[in-house]
Length: 66
Image (cartoon, rainbow, N blue to C red):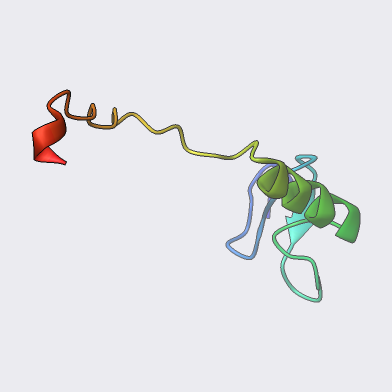
């Protein structure tokens, strides 16, 4: 297999972009525990948050409706 061709059981680490092989890798899809924890930290810090595009409804101005 050509070095530039990725096999189905390998891909690039989402954090550092190194080639990662699935077989025998306890941290797959990451290359290491360091990259796995860096990704987890981004999730916990909200770096991967999906922005809310819906605007909340405005409260009623009429007090009789509440």
